[in-house]
Image 1 (cartoon, rainbow, N blue to C red):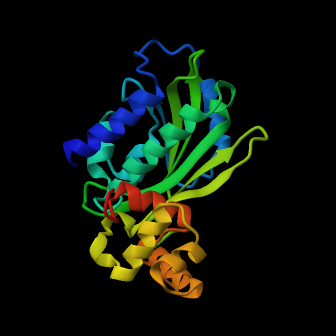
Image 2: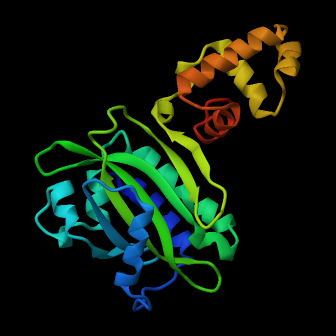
Length: 259
């Protein structure tokens, strides 16, 4: 794993924790084991993660079976990040940044009322990969809403899911609304300008400016139906679920000139 990727995800954790220093837990781990009832479990392990300190404070014995490692002490943040499949690592980093933004904008009283969920592949010592469903809830905050500790469950779903990629979801607890498939982690990170035709890039450039298909058609001297066709093709090429996601990715990954 590159140092850049580690720095990116580490920065997200620092920000969401508001750089809260490591302190002694003021809660009992046994009490919070009840949170496992929230998760769907098969072969699984759970852990307590100190966000600001970027370290595991507790890891259950199940990690040895799921990941094939010898000791719970071996499961550290560095170990996890260095063993995520190279194709999955970009969206892992992106999802963590989006989780940071979600909770930063969330009211203090709601930070502990959401579970995040997505999956990715982790390499085992024998070189094989296990697909992990990661689900996390916040279990410790300060008065300002900074996330100090989260509890996570990693479930082996290798037998349930064979396709690559993932989607990020925020599951509301205690009556809060859920936001499913907020964004996708698929091949869009490998997309470059060369994936688009010249006309698609022209259409995309206008979409980024906020124009409608009818307005774009008038500017490019093509019909609205043709514009809609180009939009549909670009969504398919980038595995984006909607135009908003397409525009966000176009801006972030510089698919159009001037971005």
